[in-house]
Amino acid sequence: MMTEVLKAAVSGITFLLMASLLGPEDYGSYVLFAAIAMTLVPLATAGYSYWVQPLVLQRGVSAASSVVLPIAVIFGLPSAVAVILGAGAIFRGQMLAFAFVILIEMVIYPLWSALVMVFLTSGALSHYFVASVAVPILKLLGTVAALLVWEGTLETWGTVLLFLGLGGIGVTAFVARSHNFLYGFRVTFEWLRRGLGFGLVGVASSATDTVDKLVIGYAGGPTTAGPYGVASRFAAYGVIPVRAIALVSYPQYFRLADSKRYVEIRTLMYSTIRKSFWLGLVSAVAVVLALVIASTSVLSEYKDSVLVGAVLAILIPLRGVQYAAGDVTYALGKSEWRLGITIFGGVVTALFVVLGFQYSGTLGAAVGVSTAAVVAAGALLLYVERAIQKLSYQQGDEESVVLHSNGQRQRTS
View (cartoon, rainbow, N blue to C red):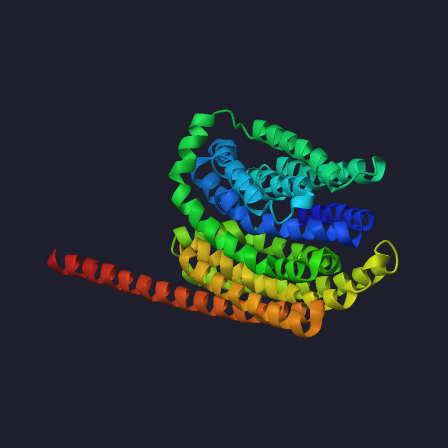
């Protein structure tokens, strides 16, 4: 929990520096570029962040860390090149900046952030703390060097962070005993089907989270996307404590599912949701206060972000439902249903955002996002409830058959 809070604090400083030094228009370009990158992260990384923990539990740290290079070579770089070439004509005037943001936010830093999870799952908590905190700290140092010291542009920022990210992955993989590329290649293909399943769910989930920025960036341009991106980023930082609670429960769902303790899964899920909800309320209030303070000081050019941020903050307590119920679907092996519900949520979000933006600009888009999130969270929780009930009934029938069979053998003897 403390690690996640520290990471959020460092990332928050980086975000404030970027928004204040780049200004609304250039920061708006970054928001749009990063939204494209973050939407495709799960496929570019073969869903690695979703299956790294189960892989550590089944095959060990070395296997989980050895797949990073194969994933980057097989999926990451080709995906990045395809996106850069495919969308390059749209951003012709900012082609270099677009390429750097895609590489950094779609491949390098997501893989690095997922890689450090091997330490958490294996119980090496000191290694996890150092490695996970190093990611945002180096990003902050790179931002300070590129934009504050050198007074550079988005291109300068991208150059610095690209080299820092590659170095960070190399050091982390070495510490995690990732030395065998061929072994990692084999493990990657063994887990490929499962990983791509997670990846598809992740793309749908990421698209749901980024569709508002894509719509606003396309329809209103970078100047409109910048203030909305600031509000959205504040709300995203408010979600981090909620996600930290869900992260603690995530490995437990898999252990309980392996032993078919479905009632305990349900109990743990609702316990996680309750904790997340109350912490989310506190976090939402903190987000609004932080936005008010920032808009009167370092982010004075983003005053329109306050009201939009207050509406988006409503989502923070609801994220606990999405995280907990979503994690349970993975543990139960129901990722295809999670994919369907997530796609449904993404379509509803896109529709509400477009309608809201047309009628009330960025404030209407924020209302649309919040409304769609309520619908999607309710649908996901309802499905998980029914899935657990069905599995519990099946388990009861199997136990009855076993008891009946044992009774028959005893009477025969």
